[in-house]
Image (cartoon, rainbow, N blue to C red; front, top):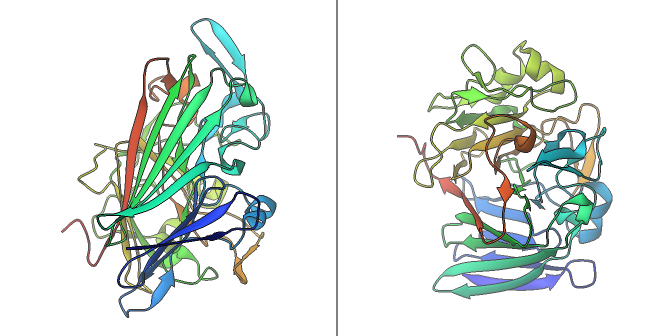
Length: 352
């Protein structure tokens, strides 16, 4: 494993690349503690890009700061930017249709994190630190966040989240990386096979907030429990009201039994043969299929369009603080938040 570091377009912002013996590369930047590139060999031994990304910090800030970034303090939407805990009502900064999205404006995704990159015993390690002061976007408590990326020789990517606070607050982080295993941003993910270990999902209201209850996936477009995978083209063609409303997936899947040993989700490209699986101790995965409609975004001289990527945002359920039985995202002094997610490549279906 080799490490290369280069400037990334803004002061104190760098890109760190870990390169294995086969020439595969994982790259991340301390702007938003984000992954910017992940190149692996496909079935024909071609080195291909598997995540959406851009080549400078300024592009992310100008086009979409969430792409590939660590999201916090709270991933997803908090209804009306408000919550009540222990008889205290907290008003947060609203940044999307009256709600607080992904921690509010100019949050973790735009922060310049402290970073330390090393290679030791064949493992690449990138440790990010961020101090979020009390009152940032309305959240109480100073928050110290540590995010560790560990890259192994086989290009397995492990994310370890850790956080401490001096005052009761909320914390529910995730990573907003988009995958496209075709190797071409302009080729949609319709030919990808998706599997998710979830018997239930959470439908959305018209404003993308959860309806407040978990529903069975049986008989819906969200039943993707077949070990062989379900072709996304088939999902998108279904007349499911939830899919039609947002133009694809933008929904939380409630995991049956979160595990770091058993795949909780997997995706395979029929074009390249690449298969990626997700392991997590988080309660749910929010899957978003980049539902752009007629919009496009230029990335690396390619036109990213509707369904050019898919996320696996491991986290507690969105708006958990305002919903019953959606999980506990309250972080108290003297407690330490910890969570792990692993992305791993496979040469064949990981379920057999």
